[in-house]
Image (cartoon, rainbow, N blue to C red; front, side, top):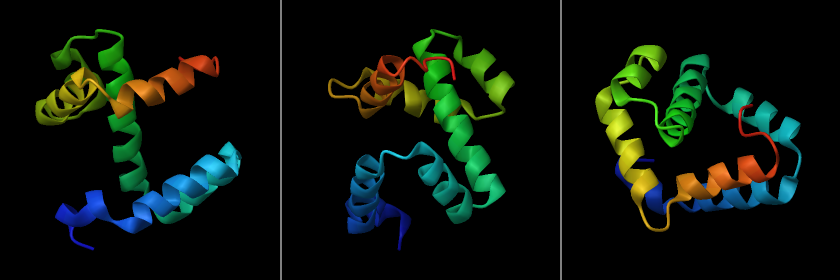
Length: 103
């Protein structure tokens, strides 16, 4: 699957439905650990960490230094957070509603 086609991949929609219906965070975590390499998991985790750090208004240069991510990735995350219908904000709201805001 080409990277530029990832947004329209039916497999992403299918996995989203499975995750939403599963309700089993341990099963989902086990699946992610089986699917991704350790490096891919680290990248995924650092991207989510940067979203949370941006939400907490941490300076972008500090985030880059702490997480070892590029300013480009941080800028992208910042832009996504500012969108009117931000998926990042919705996921953060789920986390906060569950009482796990600082997990």
